[in-house]
Length: 265
Image (cartoon, rainbow, N blue to C red; front, side):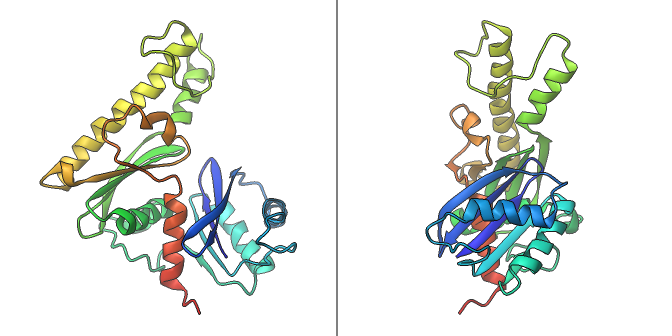
């Protein structure tokens, strides 16, 4: 079994692969204060009852792949792999790790590992040219060329950040549940805010993707647009440009990078 771990700024997603198939997944909050031992206990609690894994931490896991955007959490996960999975091959995505995707930005080292991993999965699953829209703490748009190269992207404030900012900065506003309202024209303050979030972000996605596609390909219709991230379902039904929804894109990319860096028997 391969354990994949994607550490984002808000949530950490763990996925368990049996070959190419993801058979289980878990989502937890990302807390930079957790120690390696606390992470190990949490992981044991999640995985300990799985029928395909043993009762002891690490039993049944024969590989680990990790990408992280939070350095302090990555540091503790390194310690987890050393102390609790010492004999298990581990691939941590960082400069020098073979991904198979050339990075053609001005400074490749500053591109988030999760964005590169998404490009790996997009190129493998759908080919290029492609655009990955990841609805996370930030909404990111990443461009993959027809040759499978990562050529850059766009970073915008995410849905949850925008909701929190409205609640904090708006004197008569409050934090709301992110949900689709009854109509675009809100009949009350909550619905008006929900409409602004859902339809506003759908319009943002359509506008940014259309502009990127014109730069990415001679025929923008040749560009495959893939949505991922925990909040993608909120926008899927309203955006006109999204072609594919792959919620486990980053975990699939981690599996691919692991296979490209570890000689499996």
